[in-house]
Image (tube, rainbow, N blue to C red; front, side, top):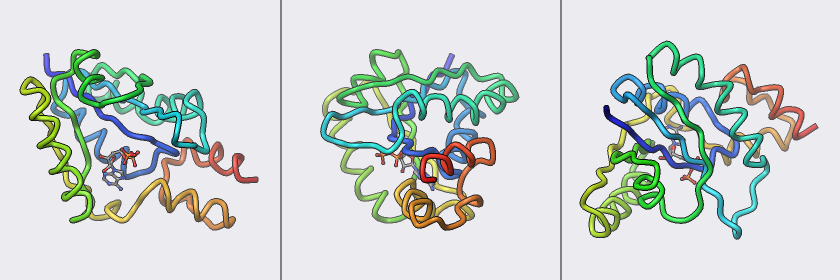
Length: 163
Ligand code: ADP
């Protein structure tokens, strides 16, 4: 049984997250999506809202891929959360060189802290490689049309937040 841990803020989830997550589910038997919480980092969407949006988008895909899906909250180091949730693979998405530089540094530090956890980075599909939660929030707050950047199932939830 291969278990993976995908940490992130998901504030809100975008088509970029769903792209990486659905591709990861093809080779994982179990995927734990960790919503990272940090007292210093203010988010627009509550943990419950992010959990609900991720469930809505990912449950059908998990059922189709026969992957066991868990959406959890975690605080602190991703590597410790991966260990606690018994998922020895950390999954990350790579959009560009900036993501690569950051992730390679983090991978090296994580490896130094624990040899039992490996990180797998999936390159973003070209059509979503420019997406970020930050840009979706910016467009939504300026009343722009962000519908092509997020899964249709959660579009109205995001819209409502910025009404
Ligand atoms: P974090 O605060 O950890 O960056 P995010 O929710 O922004 O949290 O991202 C979680 C993961 O999803 C990271 O590995 C990030 O690189 C990846 N990711 C975010 N947006 C995209 C995208 N458009 N394409 C591919 N991967 C993405």
